[in-house]
Image (cartoon, rainbow, N blue to C red; front, side, top):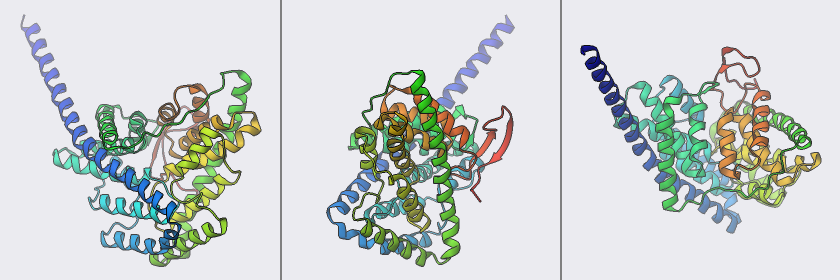
Length: 424
């Protein structure tokens, strides 16, 4: 009898403990999800607005070198020089603190970069702003160090979700970006709840979900072979993309050690290139070019190369934004051009390229697969699975984020800790 009573008490204690933990995570999800949804929506609408403004008034482009100086001044004043998405990964990994000033400084700097026509994305900025909100929320709830690291993941997931309207991909991205090869499932409920809340709030405010209409071919052996060949080509593109980004990030500061000179001259080069090219095709995030590649099967053969070079120049000069949307642009335009050569429909090839290059550059296989479903629908899922698997396996250990830890070998079935590294 005593034994049964002990069991009931033990079971009740366990249920009470689980309920308390669950309530704590739901509180965290609310405190991160709502501000990420609101600020994420404001950020999305601000970037859209300044992009329209620049398109209507092309003379704004000439402000880019001056904007570069303003951004350097912001970062110096806030003592945030050199802070990047890698700092968010370090925070989750080692509990490295995040300064709250990063949020307004990153917000304004990214919006200004897009206003002036810098070639950058939004998601890298989103991860940094979301991580900052998560760190703040962890402090509000008096979480311990390990819980606070998880709060940073919640913020990253929520902000990513608010911008792209892809809550599940955002969740898996935040869960797998830090330690590649191991999924930290304890973060699933808080991250997904925060992502769903942020998505809902952003929708209410007026963010348009990013969705593409794609026709997938039937699953058959001949098409599988073609898709495998496209995936191999995408893996090469990933290496080139990461190599150029890392080389510029290391090389330009050595060439021009003064950050003011670097930002001003970098801005001037982007302006001169745009004038010589004769259109603003590669300025800003380029979501319209991605949409044209995926939905209409239209891209120029050199799109992906130019985007790699201009993004590397923009980010290494000190302008702010993301590295994720450029990976979408590079993947979609490359896939769109390469796919017809292999007998794959151009639009579907663009969708495969987007998922594949993002997967290889971020090393987040599940997140890339789920992203493909949320952006393009589940049609052709097995093809996406093939591309993501191959680009992940063949992209090596030099992705976008050198702070990543690889806890398993990519090709051998064994555990070993490999640090993400640059191509240097």
